[in-house]
Image 1 (cartoon, rainbow, N blue to C red):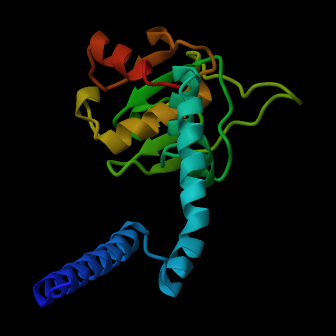
Image 2: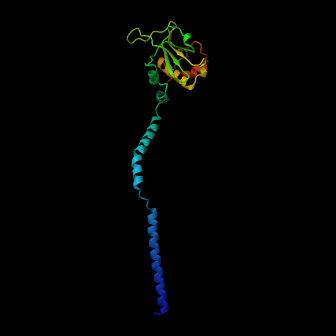
Image 3: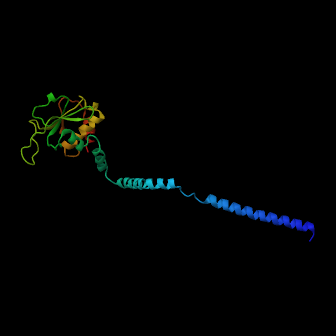
Length: 213
């Protein structure tokens, strides 16, 4: 073999070896890039801490979707029970739970405008707070409802305004909460409410009563 042929053969061998080495290196690099990085100790700790929260949130979300089948009346009652004017909150504010009455509920702006035999009487402040002005009358016997006034009123409400349309949202919610306790039938008929010196139009009263859960 001539010196020229031997030199060419060596060059080809070196080029082939370099190519094989380059391909091997590129294969290792590609495999390393395709492998997801292992979580660090801090990341594993974070996942462990948040795992319960994520599961709870997913469970809660599933429950919310499941609860969509509940009736609208049940959902409205559930929402109302957590409001500041819910029956339990009103009972704590007054010191006792109001009982349903077969009489009418009279609305007024002044306590002095209510007949002396109307009881109980609850005042609603503009802030939505409720204050007992006259206590519950004593029932005539066990299981008996409290006596009505001479005109058939079962309770009185003192409002902070003379016009029902001017009630603040908080005061309106408190009035709805009282009506929920005093009036048992649903829907509540407009005839169950009477007015002394509070003005309102029939549409306003119907809209208010439609919110009683």
